Image 1 (cartoon, rainbow, N blue to C red):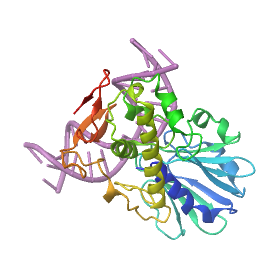
Image 2 (image 1 turned 90 degrees about the vertical axis):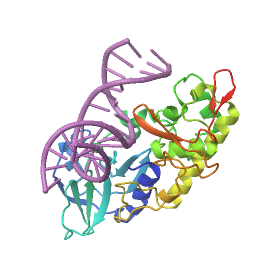
Image 3 (image 1 turned 90 degrees about the horizontal axis):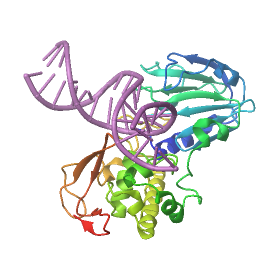
Length: 279
DNA sequence: ACTGGCTCCTGAGGGC
DNA sequence: TGCCCTCAGGAGCCAG
């Protein structure tokens, strides 16, 4: 499941297609999270002069407009030679001037492929996004301020892309573990010190995952079709019932907003409204 | 303004 | 072997 490090890994792997043009488009399945628009053909013969990322959105910039791609839950982009057989769920295929094909593959179809003619940052899906977690805009004070009015669990808040982009279920769980913060803690009960620790762990974990090519669980592959190799180092995600790697306590599973949330009750005590800690 | 629940979708895995 | 059920989850949307 692509999170920010996986999307960034994909972006870097696709840099060879810079300055190439799309010569041909085949849409095998247009029903993604949003319908693949007919005007995607406007990208034909336009050189891709930049490939950027905003949150988990990939942006292929051309003089005439921007191809915006989101990988959703199960999506991947692969740069392959045209003779490689098409796989099931290869929904969109872009044939490039350099001879390779860029194939968008997405079994669960939660992702999207759009064509933007306006400035990407003005598109509704991007306009309201929070700061990039690895930018200076994201700071301990920003995190502290943006949690003051939020009584929902801190895990939900850091996963809210309007607060900060790119923190999905895996990294949220891991960052909270390293910060020693219980995922269920009402966000507004975090102290500035808590926010400073959480800020550090979010940044550190994402940066480290990018450096190592992304986590992979289940279906993520990079643009060369390789899996990442970060998953063996996960501390809590997917380890419910196992023992904490730090204290040996049994890790607990909690369903939060219909999402599995694993934490160590010993290392991540719950802060109560009274300011006391509960183990 | 904030909150939680619902929705889209397919494939894996468990129970029988 | 096969059928049915549950679960996985990013993120927009909506009602309260």
